[in-house]
Amino acid sequence: MNNQHNVIAYLATLAAIVIMSIVAAIICVSVEPDTHLAQIVAALGFISAAVTGLIGVIGTFKARDNSEAVNEQLIAKLPPAEPPASETKS
Image (cartoon, rainbow, N blue to C red):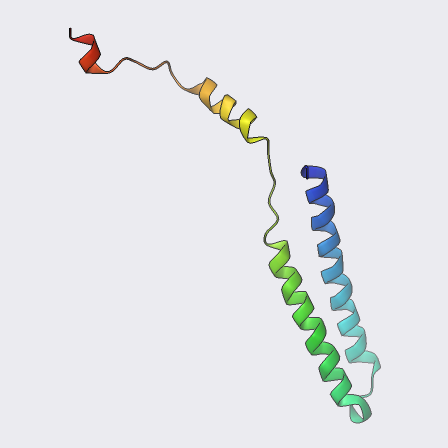
């Protein structure tokens, strides 16, 4: 997977969190609690568990770079290595 796939997966997960939260808000507003309280509690419990899981998943996303290219850039910035002191005194 490249960075474009990671961004798409991140946005899809974020969209799922937003949609599920909106559905939970609609359930709270539109359903009468006097007659369907048990169903409301069950639906909100399921939605909150799913949103919590998705928040955990979204926390695992991170940008990935080509590590070899990054290592080469870091090595290029290093000063030239000096020989150890024991090798210079012969």
